[in-house]
Length: 494
Ligand code: NAD
Image 1 (spheres, rainbow, N blue to C red):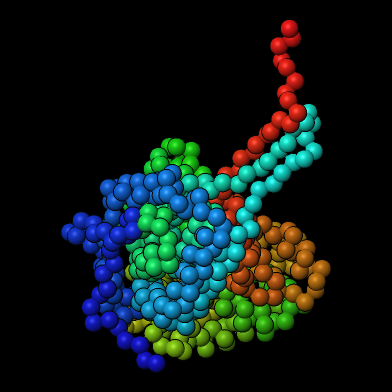
Image 2 (cartoon, helix red, strand yellow):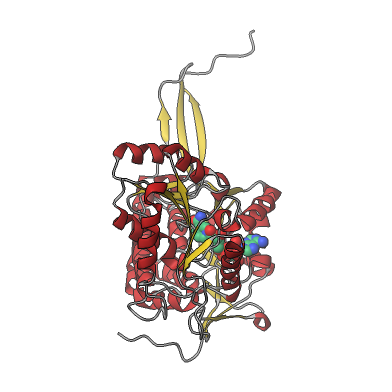
């Protein structure tokens, strides 16, 4: 099926207390498709006023509404209906995602499908959430550990996987019985607003999910500082994550952070090199490298580093970069001019620092923000391309001689989000998985998983976990109840 650009941009209102709400129209945000350079969406630019209204609605829904009080079965029914509605609107959601983000349509469809899976899984989680009991306490005490929803959760999301990252958080927040205020990225807000509408159709009570669109400052900032927000789940850059942590100190709210990465791909000499080359290339090109778990550092055992680099370059030249509305496209557009400038700036710094450019390195001429898959060898420690998160399809190759050296190199970074290991030796695979400091490790594959598996970062890549049973725990408070059986021993002796 041939897809076309919209004749006029689609307008998205904010969503507060079950209703569509307009912001100050003088400050609309017009989003251009980064692949086509035409306006595709218009969002409202929310301010602290809309955040106040959204938080008040979420607060009312939490303190006095049904959602935190309804049983797991009731919550699960709404989450399952939401998953069905996502599938029914799959194509519409995927097209909006592609137009706003620039990612290939096939990838958007896959993300929407996987997002539906997240909602289904979370429906199950709503029914298995439980506490604990202690029948072994001294002094005739009986102990009950109760799990309660944490309250109003602010969810701030980035532009790289808008619908999927939302699905890694919101259904778990709802499964726990919390209410939410969402602040999507100002570049890709469409599908988050659409999700709020689908949730209303699915039967979610008004006020449980609210969406304030707009810029990080003021809209995101107002959420992180808000005294009536109990927790913030922030996904984005390490720099803004740090400021979120500081702003949250105002009312000591709980903070979940999913931040950046500079993720190693460790390839040992005994690996299937053809499979590794393909996997490494996918790992750095997926979503045009604008991926928090992008495998942007290739650490290769010295004896195979040369042939592996040759194979990756050969494959890189075959990757289909271009119009994300085309079914065959594998790598779409860079999200905006600023991000394109950042990527090209790093490529220039790499060349100036003496790294060898093996392929790519340039912006494609013409309309749209496209950059070729880029590979550098001769990368030395201390070069900015070796240490900084570039967030583009730029691979840096560094050789290592021993297992210990490879692992030390992998861990020599402020980040700890993910790591990939390529080897045919089980011992090497397990030892490397144990020793690498990262929240997600892949062996002989990369960037895959499922709603069952927790995600999150070590070191400056974040705090807390999302998805799986570990993820839903983050949105609950633990209360311990001690009950005296058989009467309490008297304190005052008469
Ligand atoms: P960003 O930090 O610029 O923005 C993320 C979100 O925060 C946006 O909604 C933005 O509007 C908002 N924001 C900006 N300033 C704010 C402020 N002062 N207070 C509150 N909110 C504010 O990140 P981005 O450019 O949208 O995304 C790219 C970054 O996200 C990369 O560093 C990437 O590694 C990271 N990321 C991490 C994960 C993960 O799971 N670890 C996933 C995706 C992206």
